[in-house]
Length: 351
Image 1 (tube, rainbow, N blue to C red):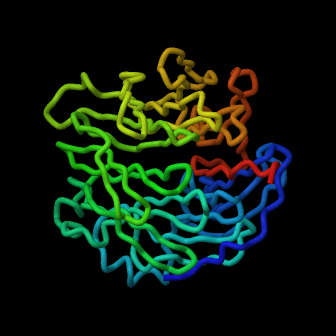
Image 2: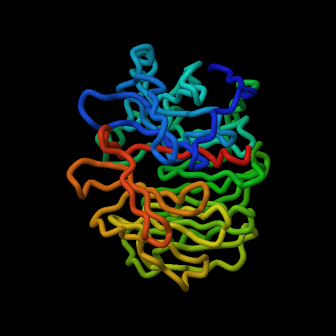
């Protein structure tokens, strides 16, 4: 395992206040590029044909970028694990320098802690069924666990619990994680302290509850709920619950891929199958941000809270678009490169 320096300089803030890291999808172009939010200052950070970004790839301070890759030097590690959808985690400076592999096992997902000194990673490398025929054949997800990585000491802490449908989210103060565990028939949300010493159940798992997201003030948690195997969809949808387990309410019956809070906590973004919707936390006011496109995917509220970024292939190739919350400022941000894989930096102008 590599240790990571966290006392590094900030990248300059772009005119729009934040930056966009993206992976081109056009033939002949590869690696991770970065540009300002107004599309100025494009730059290749690292040339890597297998690089993949996640929404949370930027560190909270904006000076690091974490990403997935599969490189020649990883072959021995990857050959030990047969489960699909396995990636090695790399981290680099926001300038593209000091690229390092962080772990000696593959993972499925990760997220930075608010302090930027820790990450959680989700991995099945210790799962008892990781190499079973059902897993390698794509019939079932492997049993995975969640680990906390201390970037200063290299210490790895495994959180209690495991499941086939793991997801997690840091609390805004970094002391706890909302975690989803479960399989095809049962799954609930748990609150677990970052050191793994305390754990409590948050939801009763009458649905498959997953992909939790904390409100910016840490008081509420939104999550997606799916019907259990063999039951109908009457309880599925998007829910909001207080962090103490009270006040659970469904805000929409729609099936969504994920939810995201706006920076001020007044709105929730709902990514549906081919569209994106904004709603208040009560579910009373909903706005469909179609941007006059038939298919909108991979949507995110921008760090300044003024718009939504998303991907669409309505014009042939996949591209990244921006639309203001009033739907009056739709703009295509990629064109020469094409992309559907991107991440947004934190707001940098006030730093």
